[in-house]
Image 1 (tube, rainbow, N blue to C red):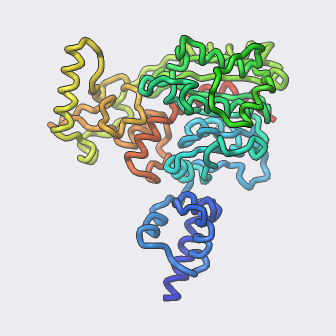
Image 2 (tube, rainbow, N blue to C red):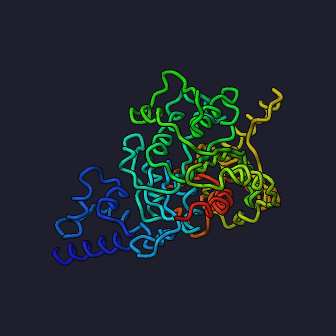
Image 3 (tube, one colour):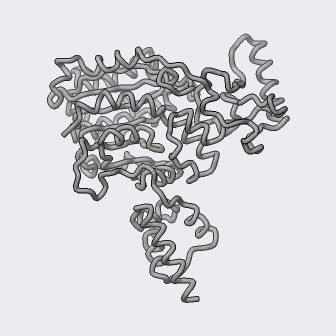
Amino acid sequence: MLDRLNSVAKSIHEKRTAMGLTQGEFAGLLGLGSSGERTVGGWERGEHVPTRAKLEKIFNLPDIIPFRSPYDGKKAKPDFRFIDLFAGIGGIRMPFQELGGHCVFSSEWDKFSQKSYAANYGEVPQGDITQIAANDIPEHDLLLAGFPCQAFSQAGLKQGFNDTRGTMFFEIQRVLAHHRPKAFLLENVKQLRGHDKGRTLNTILSILRGEEGAVVPENVPMSEEARKSLSTPLNYRVDFEVLAAKNFGVPQNRERVYIVGFDRDQVSEAEARDLPREILDGLKERKSETRLGDVLETNASVDPKFTISDRLLAGHERRLRAHRAKGNGFGFSLFNAESPYCNTISARYYKDGSEVLIDQSDIGKNPRKLTPRECARIQGFPEEFNVGAVSNVQNYRQFGNSVSVPVIRAIAEEMAPYLKV
C-alpha cells in the first residue's frame, strides 16, 4: 500500500512539474475547488490518492506545454509585456508572444477554457475580471481583449450596453485608466459597428480617445472601480476596421471588428504617422485565395461519430425548405473540399453543425460536422495546439468564441515595433 502511495505521489508530482503549474494552478485545472491546493499537496506527499476517475484525468493531461512563454523564469527580457483579458483559449495571445512579448497576466472566467489555456500555455488564467482590482494586475505595455460579443452579435439579441456582457468594455476601460499601457487591441463581432445605429461603437471610441462629452448610457451596470475610472480621461489615438479571416489565408468567412489604440504620450509615431489608421488601411487591402480542402481531413479517415444522423439531416432539410419558401437565406450550409471557404464557426456549432456541414457523398454517407482539429485549423491555430484537454462539445464552443489567429498575427506584426521597451 505504501509503495502504491509513493508511486502515485511521484507520478502526480512529475505530471504537475512537467506542466509547469503550481499546486494551486494544478488544482484549478482539475476543478478541485477552494481546498484543491491542499488536496494536491496531500497527493504529492503520499497522504492519500485521487479517485480512479480523477487519476485518469490527471494522466490524460499533456506532458508537453506547446506554447509556454519563453520568458518564464528566464533572465532574458521580453521586448514588451502584455495582458490577455477575456482570454478564451489564447488565440490573441499567441502571435504577440511569438513576436517577443511576455504575457504577465491573463483572465478568463470559463473553467473549460481555463483548462485548454493551461494545457497550451502552462498557466491557469485568473477568473472573473470584474472581481480583480486594477492594481492587482501587473504593469504592462499592451492590453489585449476579445471582449464578450454576444451582446452585439446576430445570434444574440443585440442588446449591447443593456446586456451585462456588453458592459465588459468598461472593465477594459478601468484597466487602461489605471495602467496606461502604450497600446491595446480589442476584438468584437462585426455587428458592433452598426449596433444602435453606430452609437455603441462611437461611445467606446470616444471613451478610449478621452473625448469630452463621451456619453455613457444611464443605468449601465458596472463595477464601482469602473464607474470611478470614467472620470479619468484616456488619451489614445484610436481607430477600427472590419477584417475578414478569408483575406488572411484561412478558409472561413469570419468578419470581426478590430479596435487598435496607441497612447499619444508614449508612442510619438501615433500622431506623426496617423497610427493606427495607417496600419488598418494596409491590412484591409489584404487578399488571399483559400481552399477548404487544405484544412480538412479525408472523409474516409474521420470518425463516423461526426456524421449526422438521418433524423438530424431530415430536420435540416425540412427547415431549409421552409426558409426558402419564405424567401430568406437561413438553413444548413453544405461545403466540400473544393469550397473556397466556409461560414463563420459559432459557439453554438456543437448543437447541430448547421452553419458548416461537410459533404460526404464521395463515400456514400450523410454530411458530417467538422472535427475539433479542423475547427482549430479553420481558425488558424497551429497543429501543435492541444485540443485534447476538453470534450468535443467544449472544443466547438471554444473555437466558435475564439479569434482567427492569422488576422491577429498580421495586426501584431504591425503593432510590435511600437511596443518595445
